[in-house]
Amino acid sequence: MKQVWRVLGMYPKDVQVLGAITLHEGDIAEMQTGEGKTLTATMPLYLNALTKKGAYLITTNDLLS
Image (cartoon, rainbow, N blue to C red):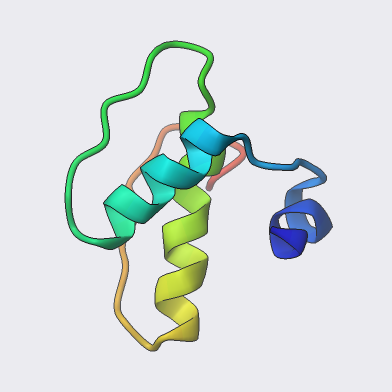
């Protein structure tokens, strides 16, 4: 989680970590408004990069682009 803090200046909440694990496993995570989908989406991308798995993220969010 230190990597998230270093790059984005945020600490993930439990629901965000659970969502990130779900996405990393190839499943779909449904989250409510305000639960932090932006931060949730970045964690599996980072993990996939570390494990040399491919990943794509399509977004209209300036923070992720």
